[in-house]
Image 1 (cartoon, rainbow, N blue to C red):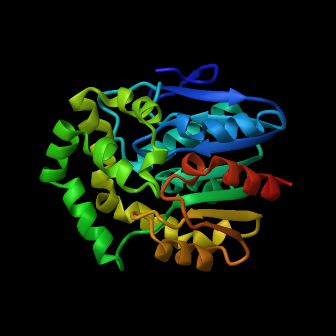
Image 2: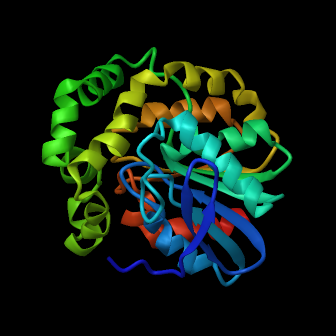
Length: 279
């Protein structure tokens, strides 16, 4: 595995967190989802480290961060660690960039410390329970149940099956790029401990999502942009429509040919959009 940036580490109460910290200037804080790590933001970090300070932590269990055996690995637990990480680094003002589970993990920063978040950039993510989405609830029940647990452990399901399936063009997930993520989870126990925990949390952390959703109005009052890959079979345009109601003044950029990882599939377009947004 070849991590493209200098590695930094900070020891927090829950465990040792690895992060990229490139450039200087206004801070861009990148929050990844599953089953990836900070590597997913490499194109954006490379593009903006000449003008901004780009910080991208790996959640515990992911990337080069520690994988403590007794950590909960739920989105609410990851959110608490991220809050501690931001406090330890002394970040006072930053643009928050979130993707996938990075939404429910990262957006609590905006709800709890609204004075710190100057701008929001959302990439195919969410922040609500799936009460009115029967299809998502059924998928989550399978993935988070005993069958899903077996598939995660023995088939590396999230990385080998789910990840390619939500790309707009599967060819965009090159073998070399895919290997960067696969190499993190060669251990079967780790797939259950870390990855399947978030699969269970799709339904299991329903009350946490509901608590975030109840405070959604607090996301307003700052510039926001939504960058959405329309060929994402996991986070469909219906979720984008919901974000439009939450952030009616946000600038929305639809990428018709991209899937779940627009910043991996069409990085040049996403970089151009972010340059517009960041001014």
